[in-house]
Length: 619
Image (cartoon, rainbow, N blue to C red; front, side, top):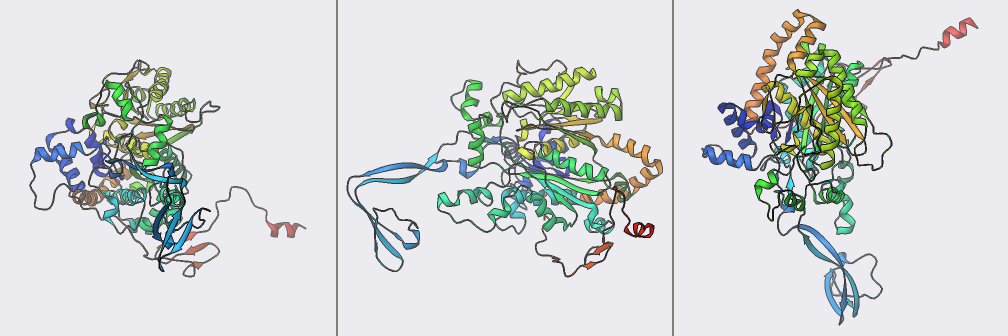
């Protein structure tokens, strides 16, 4: 796994450790703070900063907090206000010739001054204009990446939208943290046995993507040749194929609002279970913290805006500490907190994982997806989530047994922090718990720490769940002063602080706008190893453990460098580019220069055969 979110780097469980920091041993706390300080560029080589001040800087500028983007700072969000100016006298002004409108107003008189400039005379009367303005942001809380971390600065990015820079970092972090040699792995596989499923829920809507493109005409800016293609929602997969992995295998992206990560995870699982692929990189990268997207969600009444936060606590002024508590899943709350995140995982079929000595962080046996049926409001929750969680719980019971489901499983709630979500999602949880006789189902809600990163939300949940398996604890919900009265909590277990928990399985739940419900199942490494031994035998698992040592050493070497702020993302622009004439094409295979094995063209034909030769002989 690899990536980046407001809690830090995904690899090495750095982001998870930030969410349970106070519950860690002192040496792990120190390592986590120092690693985050390096990521945030708070420490220069040779510096020996005061440990207490360094820790304070890390804590204050990670997780959900006051939006630190310049666009949201004084004097405010750049805007224009339409106005009709009543001119009491004629108006004259000078401007460059190329700045003249293509279609001049009929009452304008234009006189040439020189080759480059003109003077415009406007008679008295009404004059329509756009007046520059600055709008005070009504939403100031956000789950931003740790301050000082700029993914685009780590490689030769050229006007890349932020989400795509985050995708390059996330995929590279995943690949290097695996400890595997990608070229070796690629060489032992048919190139078509590799796939990448990655995207996001909204596309790239900052100025380098569709955001700048859509604003260009009305703001007088020029559209660039990159804004249109780089805005597409599947572009994270395209970037990873073209610049990180060099993959010619399967590709694509499934967009499903807040469930997008789980949709892509399901594609990877289905491919591997069907035998179509052996390695799949799955992920999402969302960077939606732009003035326009924030305003869109605020207008819906979905975001925790300043007025709502003040009303919750009867405040007249919000402090930094208040913004850090903006997202309050299952408590009295007023909306979600928008965030950015990039999360990637590498999936393998079990035989290949054993053969390669891969570090197994867990297993994902299935993801269940169901719609809501008829709805009154397209954005309101519905009934599909009862089906997805019900299927997921039944699978765990069938695989691991009733005791494991009741006593050693936990829920990673979608937990947005909206009044509607706290009621509807808790009812889903409570009803499924009742059906299975669960009396105190632990609930984690990672958005309390990192906010809602839209399509990447379930990726944040998966990374946290894997951290729970590794550290034996579940993060608490620190913003949960008290469970709200309308939360169905009879069979659920909530905690403000981290709790020790020996888990076999976790449920990743997503309830996306439009009825995009998904629940994924993730199994612990311990359970996964037992399943592998049952399927492949003790000797195969023992041999895998021996091969894993070298892989662990390689991963540890990367993580040590990463904790010091040295990343060097894989970005292979313009290398080994092929266009077609270099291929050796045969009836049963295509040989590609640079790839050790050919792409097989032998069909997997389940449809039967009409043999023309046999028919002619019978005739």
